[in-house]
Image (tube, rainbow, N blue to C red):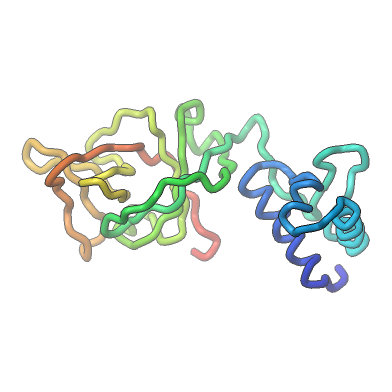
Length: 207
């Protein structure tokens, strides 16, 4: 593969990230909007250069006629797109605005029956759940329709703040338990809302 210019590298990286988040290739118009091209010809010229350098293959006549080399995984009948809702603290609770940040493509076999449910994904921050194999920068996929049971890993709002913990009981009250001795058990002083039950953990490439 020939050396890329900084703009070509930026375009190629954007295409890869777009596929990861949306499960499909960007259109030329989306590329033009992202990089500030005044016309689609500028996009076409950069894509042609990337094709010549062996980074992608163009499919004339298709709206999303870009094929990466090597190919990036796209959504299929065996996968499901899960909306990303930002980050969540596996540590002390963290107040965050739940915003949509694209989608993850997840193999249905990892999710079982939950693949047909309302799902959402978070990137993990903090280390309170390392005892259950959840580390910083991992992705967790949670099911918003499954009734939580004691011992489940849950995404929860405790006293208005988000966290991920194991659901336990403190006497007759539900509470949230960390899976790391450096973090305390959390007993709500106000309201505890279980937003979802974790169904899949996707390991960060850095682990």
